[in-house]
Structures are given as structure tokens and as C-alpha cells.
Image (cartoon, rainbow, N blue to C red; front, side, top):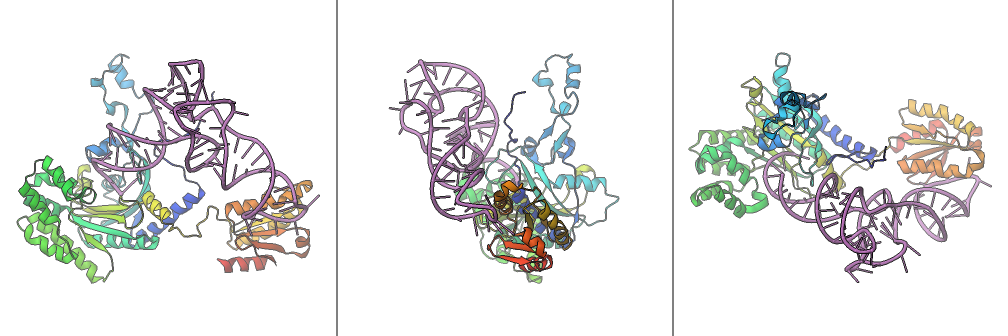
Length: 468
RNA sequence: GUGGUUUUAGCUCAGUUGGUUAGAGCGCCUGAUUGUGGUUCAGGAGGUCGUGGGUUCGAGCCCCAUAUUCCACCCCA
């Protein structure tokens, strides 16, 4: 067989040791916060039935689903129907050859899980989930075809205290990671109210999609886009009169209220936003939460509050987190009237921000090893073994260089073993030659400083623990 | 799905209007240093120029197809 050049599917990546350590650092940070707020872990399969996934993310989302070809002869049905003839386009149905797809997000599988386990779970049900998802997008900055989401959701509770907790989770996690962020909040009911005041409830999503781009294309761009959608100048003036309100959160709400007072739904949305702001005041949290009536978010299932987080520094402009409340996500799976609210962290984008701004802790290393035992021959290597075990028993990650260099190459020992420690970023070497073996000690060297000293194994353990 | 862009040594990139033997920096290997990495010095290895076709006396360079990278739109973590 001809040699083939290996490659990865578009938009996927390998992660080497250093990258995995950094990714785990982010995951651990977020997971710790999730647990602290009472969330329990959940994992769901990589693939779901297409019937579970399709229709949940809008037309765009359906296009981005990775579909899995049925195993066996996927085309069997079609062939039989057509007597092995070539199938015409009109006869071709994807559902005939594919009934499974890769997870597109974590919220829908979660909803599916809740419905399937409704009798076994205790409500309100709080779960977190950190797993990869797949989207058949074109890759670009901050956009991958395989990426991780870290979700925390609560279902079975209408209380806005859940929103309050989720806001605090964002704040705590991003603070711990050292990321400057802006958390924007809006409410779909407010958007509905705005749509009603401007024109009618039917145009909510049209307006939402357009004004969500306000930051990017400016007022002129949004006006132009909506004009093309058939909005009159008066309607657009009404719209911008509302969404250009600026100021402190509470003032914004007070100003908005009279403008959409004719819509019951809009007022309800304002009420919810007010209550959340009030809660934040009660706990005296110094959280930068910014109300933004132009925030829309794409996912079609949000019905209440919506959140979006962007990093304030660095070149990544897209969101590193998002979420919101959905009143009836489980309804489509046969469990109506269960309200949920959740947030998501975009691991890969958070990684990109931390990497660009050099915010990863410097002590993160590819190798966890703290001490490498170096030696001259089989006898000195043997001498290292009990010391190696002692170090490990003391909880210190340690290795002995596994190969023995033959006498005639003794000059190469220096290179090979110390090169290894240096290349892996191992902070200490413990060297044993014949003299050291005779005296029951090691030459312990810090590769960072170059300082070297004679140590017994007990002294080495103490030294190491002091330097940590 | 639409538009643009990238691909040359392990990595980052030069490469003139198409013209002998395709270069640099870093990394790697060897030695200076027969008990020590990272610094310094000397030397060395390493490339079917993404892939497949085509044009040409001649292609890294031009044309077509395809894959891939990155970027923007749509949409989104």
C-alpha cells in the first residue's frame, strides 16, 4: 500500500501534553465553581438520534449537524426500493441512510435526559456537563468544528435566584481565570415587547437578529438591513429610541418601562431584569453586569433572560460564554411546563484568550515529574530505585532515566539524561555516581537556577517540598 | 452555504519577468566538554516545493481540479 500523508479532519486538532494541561486547568477551575454552587455532573453520549437533534437549532443549526452514516449497508433500503438502480435525487432521503448525529450542544441532550429520567431525578435539578460538541461550520478565528462546552443548567425552577447564581458562577470562574470580561444581559420578553411596540410580535426574531449586530455594523447598518425587511422609517425610529437607551442598569429599566408599557410581556421582562439587579444589590456583589436591549442570541429556545460574555481584552471578539432561560425545552420531548435556565462556557475560546494574553499559570508544565534520577551505569541506576520509591511515597512525582548508557559512551550521559529533564521542564535532577553511591547521597541540581548540592534522600524531599 | 486567502526543511518564513545545484533564522545531530541541561564556538544532516492533471524546450513561479490553513459573511461557544 502506498504511504499516505496523515492529516486531520478539517477544524479538528490534536492536543499535546502542554495544551492538555492548560485545558484541564480551565476545566478544573470551572468545574470547581460549578460544584460550589451545587451542580452535579452529567455525561451523555457523543451521538444522539437525529430525531432528538433536528429542529432544535433552527434551519441553520440543522445544516451544521454532523450526520453519521448508518452502519452496514446504509443504502440497502434505497437500493431495494429501486432495484439496485441509481437513486434519483427526488427519492433520496437522508433519513434513510442516517439516523444518528454528533452532539451539537449540551442543552438538548440534557433536556432529553431530563425527560427520559423525569421519575428518577429530584427537581429542581442542577447539572453541569463538560464535553465536546461538533458543528459542521467553516472554521475561523475562535471557531472550531470540534470544541468543548461547559454547561450548568437548572430545570424545574422558575426562581430568578437561579439566574443570580449563574451570574455569580460566571463572575467567579472568569475572575479565577484572570480574564477581564463583560457580562451582558437581556430578556427575550423585553425583545418581544419591543417588537410589539415597533410593529408586531411576528417580527421579533427579525429585529433580534438585526440589532444583535449593532456592535458590528452600527446603527446605519441595522437600519439598512431592517429597511430591506420592510420596516418604515417611523418604526425604525421607535426601535432606536428604545435600544439606544444608555446609563446605569436601573435607570435604563426606568426609561424603558414607559416606552413598552402597552405590552404585558415586555413589562414582565423588565420586572425580571429588575429583580435580578435587585438581588445583585442585596448580596452586594461587585459584578459588572450590563443590560443591553440589543443582545439577542441565536438559539431559538430562549424565552426569558439571556446572557452573553465577551472578553474585554485580546483580539477575540466573539463570545466566550452564553446562556439563558428556556421555558419549554422539554416540552418537545413530552414534558411540558418545566422551566430551565443555563449557561455555557466555551472552553476553546477561553483557552485562546488565556493563551493570547499569557494568563496561564507559569507552573503548568507538560510533564508533572518533579525529580529525575540520573546515573552512570547499572549499579548507580539500581542505587536510585529505592530513593525513587521513597520520593513517590512522599507524593513527589519522580522518574529514573530508564536506559543505562554503556561505559564507552559515558561522556554522552550528561547530554542524554539532563537533556531529557531539560526538554520536559523537570525542575530537579538527582544524580548518582560512584562517589554519591558510596556516601549514600545524590547530587541534586535545580535546572532553573543551576544550583547544585549534595543531599540525602530525606533532604531532597524537604528541599523539594520547600520549593513548591 | 457564500466570498477571499494560505500551503516551500521538524517550526516560522524568503524565493526576482518561468531559466543551471531552491535559501535564511530557529530547532535537530556531531564535536570543543570521558560526571551534568539551559549559554558560547566549530562542523553536519535534513526539501518528490500540499496532491493530481495541464501549458512549456524548461514550472516552486502560469492554467484547471482537489485537499488544507487562516479570515470575513451567515450563524454561533
